[in-house]
Amino acid sequence: MICPYCGKETLESSSTCNHCGRWLLDALKAGPAETIPQIPASSPDASPETPVFTAEHAVVPIGGSHPESAVDVDQPAIQPEISSPGQLKPPKDPSKAGMDKWSLCFIGCFILLCLTISCVTVIWLFYSFSTAFDFIKSPTAVPTPSPTPSLLFSDDFSNPNSGWDRVIETDYLSDYYENAYRILVNKDMMDVWANPDHLSFVDVSIEVDATKNGGPDDNDFGLICRYQDLDHYYYGIITSDGYYGIIKSSSDGSDALGRDSLGYSNLIRQGFTANLIRFDCIGAMLTLYVDGVQLDQQTDSEYTSGNVGLTAGTYKTPATDILFDNFKVYQP
Image (tube, rainbow, N blue to C red; front, side, top):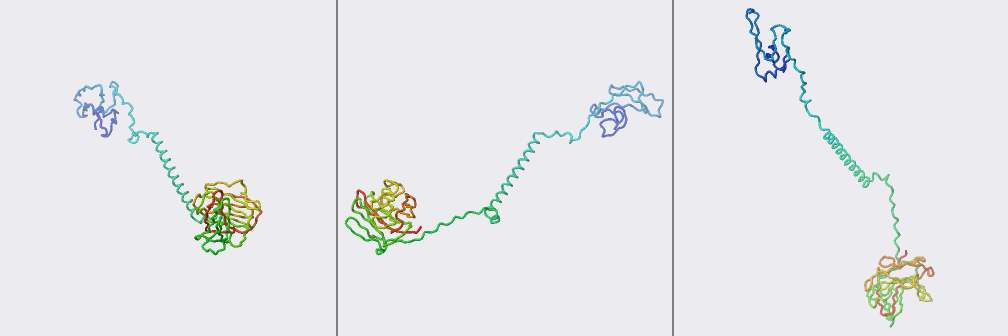
């Protein structure tokens, strides 16, 4: 490539002249420039024509240096540095780079948390359902089974010759009746009781199913323990209208222990509905239950042993009629 300014040959790929330093790109944009005709060395007689130069061109003598009278050639300005394509990329947005860092941190923490929970769950399941860790587990207290009470006596009254009283009077009746035992009282303010053959117990737990067969709800019926004679025994009773009490019979009459009158409970099934009555006489402690729930508990130590039995009675209205079944006596 020939420089349009100095007329010397320069590289094709250069953007500036290797000799005068002028920008070749500007000359190409401006169009073809005049070149200085060179006088051949073999024609000394030829008179060179003095070319007309524009302000942009400088006179350069052939094969020599610039004369003093020559117009000074403007030197090109300092060339700007040309950056490589990688250097021209804009820097990353610092806020975006920060978000990427926190996102990766959050994801890592979440994965670590999931792994921790999974490991803890596996260890807990293995600990709970495996015997491998039995040596570090605290021993579990095994409850001591309560002894099963032994049955001392029972009667379902299917046999009329099992030994209970069989009395039929005008004022009352106590006898076997349709696979049950029946006490009927036809006189007001009267109690009637019945016992099996001559038996005697000390500490007992007695139970029986009792149902009103007829008569008023203003009645009483229940169980006897430590029966010694007609005047000395304990009995626990309920009524068909929801009352209960523990009574002591003595030569002076009958008195409710621990209270002036019978108590009331809505746990007692009233009317013709059956109730499971239980009466415990253990030491000096006397306890009355209905359907497995404690109703009353009193203490008295005068009678320590005796027979067991059934009782029913009237108040102001006669005709109390009670059926008993499944009589049982346990040793507590």
